[in-house]
Length: 423
Image (cartoon, rainbow, N blue to C red; front, side):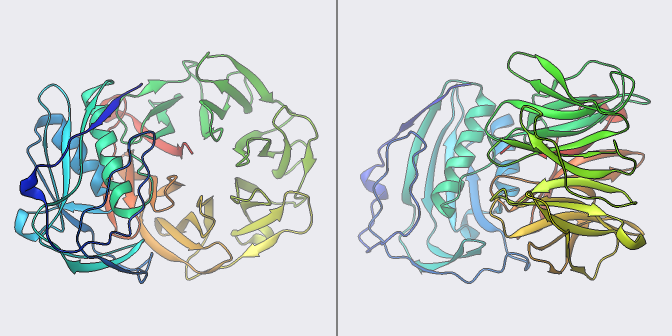
């Protein structure tokens, strides 16, 4: 869907006489560039990504109904918290009478710490950072756009409110693949096969998925173009075909095949050619994922009867163990797009979402859950959380530990799991 954003000029009442040097990234995403206000700000890079970082206080006012709810949800899972005016470092005011209009301003004093660094300084009340009016698309989409613009302006990192996720929906003995907005709204069924499906995976930069399905009676990997609906049986070797993972450049696909006996990691070209076996063990491998540079494939294995994370070169060679000290039975790894972290599920009585540096080391448990998938911003995770007898998808902002449940498909009786975040 398309939208339009219009800059609204600030009034003279919002101008400040105090000097301002704003070292924030200005990226228009096709919008006009804004001029910096005349105040003073200094930046120090000191944030600890895995420490308990405080969320950025922002006062949100003037919005109502769905738009107010969307803005608070989006900003919470990107590291912000809605606070009263006198506690705010940033002020978001606006309206949604017919279309969304928003103005982002600095509070009286700025002192923030997040994954991007620390900003301190004295500024005048309501120094305007931007003022925009949105049109086109739905009112909900306009609110997502505003949230992303706020995050980009303040942190210099693209927001994630306009991204999508794919996931599995269980409704008893069968399941289907769905896609939705990142918050679970606007769900659309990809499959209608009334069979068992699993492990959806986006093709980077394309509106297409791979997933495992029993549509043909055995577990095969299907590719589906979501624009046309066309799909093909991508991998249908003897035995199990599962867990497709597409390389960052979209040219190769890693997967788990049991065509020679036990489940092993294979890789092939995107057209299915040049199939190559990368692991040869008697025990099972599972859940391959790619390093952002496309050189390595990380996976879980039970080599020597102990489950651990490994990586293997896409060109072949001996697998290298990735240490995850402090946790047991790691599985379901996902490599962050910035290359710094691997998120995974650990089984320690229950299931825990953990992260470890990409080279290995001491793992950090974050929250109860399973099946983590990184957002494009490399700080937010979507994962499945058990809620009674069902599972719901939740979104976790790793630095602040704030999380929100996504909207659930098919009502309270369905389980939503195995999410994959589009990148």
